[in-house]
Amino acid sequence: MNAPTEHADIARQHLIDPEICIRCNTCEEMCPIDAITHDSLNYVVRFDVCNWCNACIGPCPTGAIDSIRNVARDKPYSVEEQFGWEVLPEQTDLDSLEVGGGDSLPDEVREITEIATAGQGGPALAPWSAAHPYVNLYAAKNPVEATVTGNFRLTAEDASSDIHHIVLDFGATPFPVLEGQSLGIIPPGADANGKPHLLRMYSIASPREGERPHYNNLALTVKRVTEDHDGKPARGVASNYVCDLKKGDKVQVTGPYGSSFLMPNHPGSSLLMICTGTGSAPMRAMTERRRRRRDRNEGGELVLFFGARSPEELPYFGPLQKLPKAFIDMNLAFSRVPGQPKQYVQDLIRERADKVFEMLTDDNCYIYICGLKGMESGVLEAFRDICRAQGTDWDTLRPQLLGKARFHVETY
Ligand code: A2P
Image (cartoon, rainbow, N blue to C red; front, top):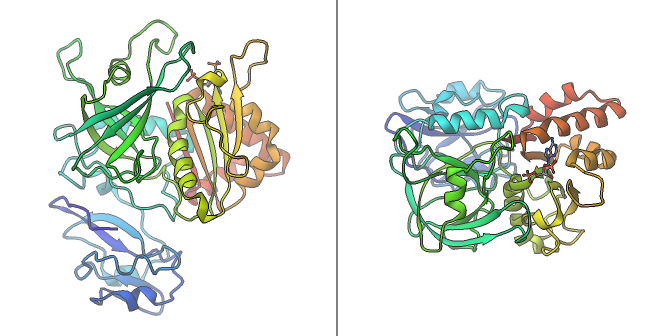
């Protein structure tokens, strides 16, 4: 947790989550400059003393120390205020301010995020053990230029959808991301009214240390849009631009975005992942992070429900990518296989009702839904029925999941 570059009026304040803190005094002992103190109730951080040296972060046994809020620089939380807390205060609207350059989140990012997360039933927090994301480091007026280092078609040549795996390299420019975050791409040129194209958002499909580990790169999963929502032929400006990129091409990138749809760092946490099509991007990022750390035997189950038209159209989790059963419990729903009944993810979720209920009610399990808007209502209906069969009310459970930062939805 480094002190991020800050806006002139906004500062990041290092805090301690009183709900998670076990008052073990480790942080106070580790702090070389006495920035941490306590009273009979809480351990707190002095805003004017903390220099973000991070000496306290690793030793904290619960992660309570790893809490940040954006605050007005001239009005940080005082030590006295923090002594009075039973819970961390909600982030105020200041969080929308850019940490790198002084702009608020672009309107289109705000709008897209609002629509995409509507199915959660309210604003979500990041899982308590998630690493802190960097958000909005590069705005549309100061995008970072990335170089395309790979563009591979993920779906079979004769498949009906054209999905690409795009690798972008950021050279010497920092572009730190976490699994579950997205970025913006600004297509070159202008729209029919002569206005520059707005940015389009894409989920990142690679884990935090890069598509190629320890290179400053990441991967995206982009589907070429060839029809509109009503099925009429239409050419998606950004998706066609991205899918046609060649190695060596330069791309204008904004972001990163997303501060709640993040994976837990706690190795014992389980992930219930539900997606369709390119909604597999964040699931691939999280799965790949866990896969690369597999020899650590960190526990935590991975269960995936993935809907695609056919086995030939399964980005990342298809037959060629043999992930062992013991590592990930994969449930693949195919909707357009000749001679087979149409299957959607919600059908398989119902078939695995006991497992799904176990995960919905396990505090160590985090739930992620990403993909088509239409799928969301089907999945939520399946959750409702599964809960009802067990004597649990989904409408009561959902806000509880949200309160524990265990329920994350991004649909489009
Ligand atoms: P369908 O064959 O009915 O379109 P796409 O390939 O268009 O991105 O879609 C990914 C998968 O999501 C497809 O199998 C698609 O099935 C499926 N899908 C479409 N609508 C829904 C829905 N309402 N609920 C669940 N899955 C859906």
